[in-house]
Every structure is written in structure tokens, then in C-alpha cells.
Image 1 (tube, rainbow, N blue to C red):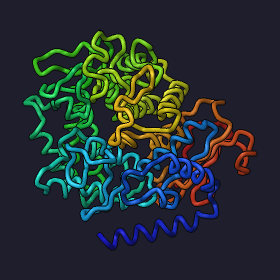
Image 2: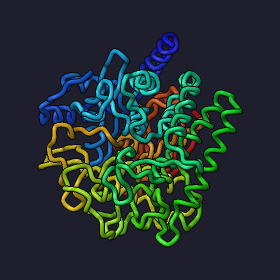
Image 3: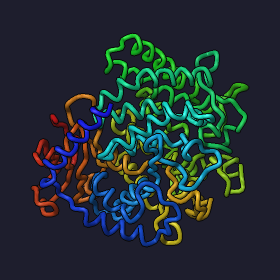
Image 4: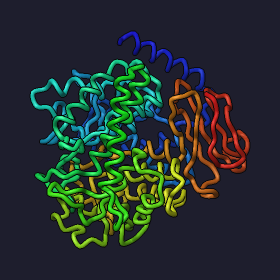
Length: 512
């Protein structure tokens, strides 16, 4: 394993060095943002990379991004700056925390698994993948051997996230090393949370979504969350089994995925409400539409039919999920909206949670990328929601990230709680890279980019220093050719060499 890591680092260094002169963007803007973020931070907690070293670490590890939307660009760098705060070096390797301070329900090293899928999706874009390698290994091997295990304290889409990271870094050896462990972990979920009919149940609190309209801390409901996660996990395990030439395992997970897809579409779908819903332990569907009904699209689970796409009209409906400060976690028209707590606990009965917002945005991106039936959704809708999400990162006039917000005022409902600062429980950078800019990771040697930026929204943008399939990518749009001096249009470079271009901001493919 050590030889593999050394070889990978040598390859990375060689690739970075060969492409350094070809970079379009400098770290000038990053430096200005980092200096500002550092200046407003009391740095109550210092982990592996303190503020004083944050610029150096970020310069070495993150893709650079430039765009005319100042809110999106600022939050892009802020979120990376915040992620860096959660990186801890432990005797068991590197991990990422969820809360910056000690949490009572955390496991070893203050680790919590509820945001694991988000952490891997975000972290797959770091140039140094040792951090994510160690972090995945922690949950697969260290936590299960610890005196109090926390991995299964929360639902997880780890297999899906691990495979989607592979699509970026093509580290087949990591998949081969961990496939059977991931298989055993899936089986453990079946033993713990599978019903006799092969569906999955979960308490809402173990979905990290407590005090919901549909759920309860002791109610074993069949939820779109865990059933979609396990579908995504099964699909990913099938793909990883094929990668490792394990036909038996591939067939096994193909069957599991097919069953869960049919179940969610047939049994958790409410034709009258046009929505995926929670099925109660006692039977019947909940009468509330909740944001968890959008999660099936995160994994491309719904069939491409108009009746399923019809669900998305609720996203832009002010009586549905459209609120001034973001996407609510329950429909605003429901009589039990925002009734389940004080407003300062942890309620998923309507308030805006970045965790759910980033899941919903990924689902909307998939709808726009892979479905013909889109029910009026568009690139403009996607952009508007991403912009609104970026604008929500504020408190008292300063940039801020907390747990969850009042949908009308933007108040962070935990206040300026030390545990809630820099809450690492969602994604943002991945949404910019893979969805708004549109870099769609693939298992083959083709590069696919499908920007979800509306025509004429921006005259320019650049995503630079992206490590993908061992190459350093630069993706830029320059309407006039004057911003970056590389010519007009949409252009893609790999290690400084132009590999694709178009006069329009449109879907583009190239060999890499």
C-alpha cells in the first residue's frame, strides 16, 4: 500500500509540475478571501491546518474558481476554507469532523458519520487524496473495532460516494482493496435495518433528520432516504464488482438495485400528491411532502416518466419548498410545517438545512442531465437555487455557515453556537464543479462537461487546477476572448493542451 501511495504522489507531483505553467488562474483572489476569512475568525479550535497555514494548504489542494457572481465565488472559497478546519490528523490517520467542537454523540476522534457521503463527494476534488483514503479507511476498519461504534449511527451512501470518487481519481487499487469490506458492510445494514420484505426502515433521527413531520425517534418507518441510499450503494457495488471482475457480486447487487428501484417507484410514490413519501411502520403513506422525496433523483432512481418529474413543480412553488432563504425541508402548505420544536433544537419539519439543500440540488442536476421529462425545470431554476444557497451563507453581515435556518429571515436557528460554526454537513464546491460547471466524472477515457449555467448568465468563468484521471484540467468560458486571452468560447485544457472547444456554452466531450 505504501508503494502505491508513493507512486500516486509521484504521479501527482509530475502532473502538477508539467501543468503549472499552463494554469490560467493565480492564487491572488484565493489569498484575498483567505486573509478576510482569517481576519473575522477567532480560531477557537485548531486542527491539522491552522488559519496561518490555510492559504498554503488550499493553494496546494483545491481547484481554483473564477466567476462574475461574487456570492458564489466567495462561498466557493469559504467552504473549502471551512472544510480545511475539519481535517484532523489522528493516530488512525486523517479524518474530517462534522462539528468543530466536541460532540457528545461523536465516536473516536470526534468523528460522526452522518455527513460522510457529502464529505467524500466534496473531498474527491482535493489534489492530495490521502486525506480521503484515510478517512474512508477509518470508517471501514477503525470505527468497527472501537469500543463504541458510530458508523451505523446514521444512514449512509458510502458505496455510492466511494465509486463516484473513483470516477475522478481512477484509483482502482483502492476499490480492489476495499470491495469485500464494503460488501460486508452492506450486509450489516441488511441485518440491522431490513424488513422481511427486503425494504429498509429507519428512525428519522438516524437519517440525521430528527423531529420531522413524517418520522419519529422511535418509529421504524420505510423512508425514501435509506431506501434510495441503499439503491445507490447497490448500484455502486455492482459497478465496483464489475471493475474487479467479480461477476457473482455484480449479479447480486444488480438484483438488489432493481428491487429497490421498483419498490421506491411503486410503493413510496403517492400518485395523488405526485411525490415520494415516507411509508409508516403501521402502513400507509405520510400526508406531507418533504424534501427527502427529492433524494431518489440523487441516485437517478426514478424512471423517466412525466408523472415522476411532475414532483419538481413543488420546488419552485411558494406553497411548496420555495422560501426566501432556501429550499425548505417540508412543504410550506402543510399544517404541521415548523411545529415540531422550539426553533432552536434540530427540527427537519420545514426549516432550511444545507444538508438537504445540497442533496436536492444534486437531484435537480441529475434531472437536467439525464432525464427527458423535466417538468419545467431548467438551467435558470438550477442557477437561481445555487445563488440563493450561496447567499444564505451569512450572519450579521458576515459570511457564516451553521446548521439550519429560518426560511423567511435567514436566522441560523442555533445562533452563533460554537459547535455550529463551519458545520461540515453538506456540499457546495462539488455542486459548483460537477453540476454548475458540469464536469461529469466517467469510468472511460472521455471527458464530459455539461454546464448548467443559463445562456447569457455569465460572460466568463474559469475552473482551474482540477485533478481528473491523472490530468490537470482547466475549464473556461470566455464570451469575448478578452478575459483570459485564450480565445472566444468554451475551452477545455488538459495539462495545458487544449482538448475541446465550442463557440457556445454547451455540452462538450473529448478524449483525455
